[in-house]
Length: 318
Image (cartoon, rainbow, N blue to C red):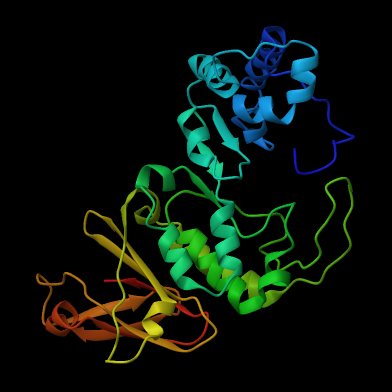
């Protein structure tokens, strides 16, 4: 990593060496026999330009010639030719995620979303979710991992729940950390093989059980996802900017996720295409176990009225 001192526990391999590439390819081919995929640590460091710039001094001193083909493109293609369903996950930063996806990675870390979720700025999250679907479907969403402080520690209980709802109901791979479901607070060094005892946070545990009972349905996995546009509830009310919403549709199954990602009570209107619904139709809030009757005409023309407490959410079936 060019921004940190050399790693003392990691061998630096010359990615411009044909022998090194063959050696690593053989290791991965053997791994295809015993597991279903690999997570590649700091994967962007092996990109030709990054590797060349990071080790410019050594490359110049030893007269090393860069190889024309990208390391990841070559190695992933070879492995996929042997086992096409073998997954490659890239830990990636520096806005190089898309480039790594083009080289064959099935999923890349979405650290940008994680950082945006740490802020209170819902508009920043909305902006991120406007990315192309091809990119989003191959993004790995998470709110904590072994390198990060625990979500409940850095975000707090209520905000961490709102963030968990977001990453669990948008496109892409959903990534959860050991101890996240139990509400653990202590970040553990990866070098340790033991951990301190922490009391189970029953509220967090129950929250995740409830959330997963909702999002386990096929509509959240196989459906078509689209971002919705919250509108103001009345002139001068700008709290609609705090609300993020999207929908999933699979055949006749429809789900709407609405999250107030702010520390302020917020309202909005959401216009939905309910022209084929009866005048009075039911929305079931699967997250909060509440049912609502609403006017189809009002929802279509004026919009579904939403009022949410800070960090609260709805997941509607309608």
